Amino acid sequence: MTIQERIDQSETRVTITVFPFLTNHHDTLFGGKAMAIMDEVSFMCATRFCRKSLVTVSTDKIDFHRAIPSGSIVEAIARVESVGRTSLKISVNIFLESMYEDGRELAIQGRFTFVALDNDKKPIPVLQDLAIG
Image (tube, rainbow, N blue to C red):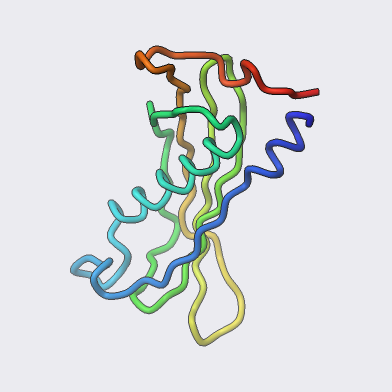
């Protein structure tokens, strides 16, 4: 399997409904919850790519383009953006949909970096032992 095929197969999508318990005092999705969703979907994507033990080591700029009101549907899409020796950078986009209207728009973007670890919690190569052509 090529790296590109592995990237394509590891793309991960999570869809949720924004219920009131996920919102802030403005009745929009709480920013911390949005970041947690992004971290989780990017972790799943990174794990699917390399099938190694991973930890989040950093986030790049997270842009909140649009508030996400309660009662919306959101889809978080994570995709491998770059592969380093021991790390993976994952881009995440959250799209906003109204429950009762067609269409969707980009609401939040960010990037998360993960490092692969061995049993002693030391960094290891991401692609080591993978049969990649």
